[in-house]
Length: 180
Image (tube, rainbow, N blue to C red; front, side, top):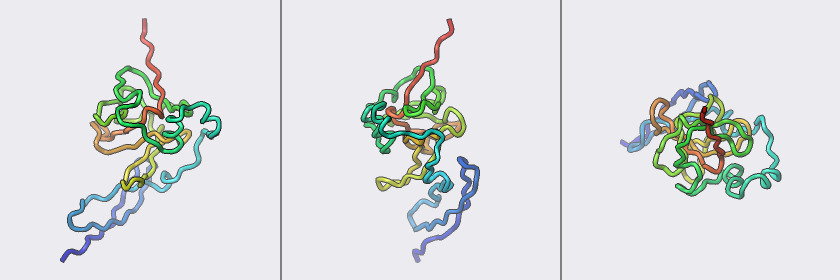
């Protein structure tokens, strides 16, 4: 008999340090692991420290930067300015200048977008559930202004096992100055 297996999972949300419950029906042939469920406080966050004036942003950003950060767009793979950048330095939000990632945490994942295995500081990037395009993913946004950055996947290298796949159009880079 092919009855679905029903079970409840108690998931720990490491981003908001709380627990949430997820019911999962597993049908024969499906993965037995539950889909990650994030705390509801990260699903539709609209309270950000920096308020963004859309008209000013359209003047400040290129059309692609605006599309990526404000309309949740994605640049074409292998087309972004930083996907193969190997210089030492920091990556900041193109909208509000918040520090997001450091070059120490960058690696070549071969996906065509800049990839990082950790954020610069705990809490500099927020996560949201993203179910667009028929996929279940986790969107990454700037914690200060809410600008769309990209997505995070759990196929990255140690020590975190995470791959922050970030659009170059949402970042700006500042290299480290070398001591003389």
